[in-house]
Image 1: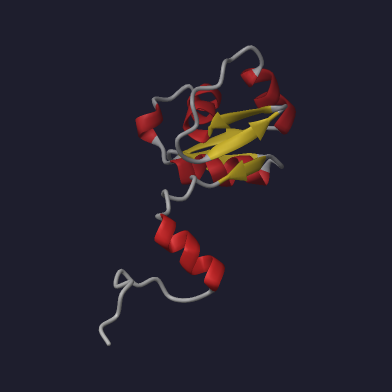
Image 2 (image 1 turned 60 degrees about the vertical axis):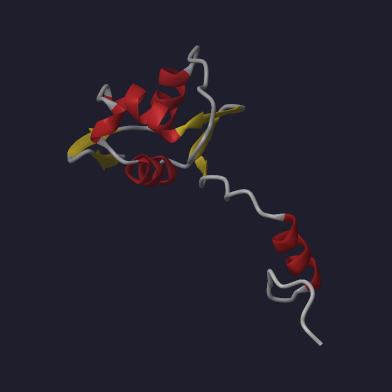
Length: 104
């Protein structure tokens, strides 16, 4: 399948991407990731391997779109940490309010 990453076209198939990532240790995932085999890789790491370009030359979104089209499962970046107040508010299904003691 033809995909475009960093303005360059690449003809890739799923098995080629899987073969290219064999034996490569996944870096810690801090943003978007892709499941290849039974490992989660950062999409930028995979993009660098399959395009042989510096990862600063393309966006994570470009690689995510390409890998999704090839049939890989991609995950978006983990949401930011939530405060206990936000968690409790969601559980109660009420809007979060920093004022826990309203004036009488």
